[in-house]
Length: 280
Image 1: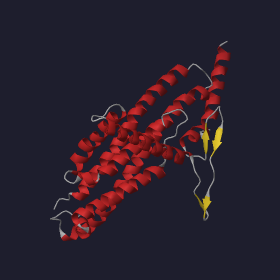
Image 2 (image 1 turned 60 degrees about the vertical axis):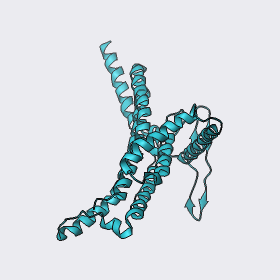
Image 3 (image 1 turned 180 degrees about the vertical axis):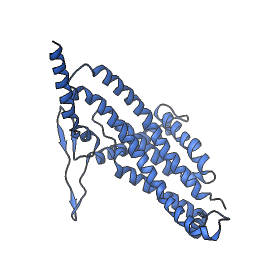
Image 4 (image 1 turned 135 degrees about the vertical axis):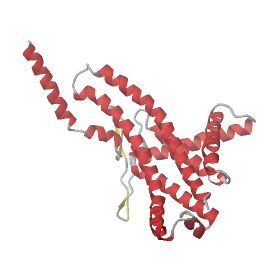
C-alpha cells in the first residue's frame, strides 16, 4: 500500500516536471497574437496586412487598443451630453468628473504648478487610456495592451516629447539645455554632467515604459500560473488553494490597474514640471 502511494506521488511529480517545462500555454495568453481566442466557442483569425514589405497586420493588442479608444469616445460623449441637460453631473458624468478633478488637483497642479493647464489634456488622455486598457485585460477573453512593450514605449515616447517641448517652450531651446547643468558646478565637471544629464533625458521615458509593461505583465503571469497548478499537478487537491490565491491576485490586479495609470501619469507630470520650472 505504502509502495503504491510512493509510486503515485512519483508519477504526479514526474508529470508536473514534464508539463512545467512547456510554458507555451502561459505565454499564449500573455503575448500578442494574430487571433482572438474565445475557447471553447471558437477563434477569430485577424487579417494579415503588408505594406511596402512591412508587416502592419492587425493583432490582438491592436484590437483592444481600438476598443479602448471607442469605449472612451462613447463614454465621454455620453458624459458631455448629460451636461447639456443637467447643470450638475449625475451617474457616469459624475464619476468621470471625479477622476478628471483628481488628475487635475492631485497630479498636474502639485507637480507642474503654474501653467499646468497646457499639459492637462495630455495627462488626462494618458491616464484614461492606460486605465481603460488595464481594465480591458481583466475581463474574460480580454487582453492587456499595456502589457505590450511596444505600447508602453509609445506612451513613454509621447511623454518624452511633451517633456522636452514643454521645457523648451518655457525656457527657450538654448536656455532649457543650459538649465540641465546646475549653477556653481566647476568647469571641469561640466562635460561629465552634460553627458549624465543627457542620458537622464532618455532614462526617464525608459523607466516609464518598463515600469508599466513589467507590472501589467507580472500580475497576469501570476494568476495564470496559480490556475495552471491544477492542471500541471493533475489533481484537484490544489484547486481550492490555487483558485483562492488566483482570486486574491485578481482583486489585487484591479488595484494595480488603477495604481499603474496613476503612477505613469504622475511621473510624466513630475518630469514635465521639472523641465518647465528649472532651478536657476
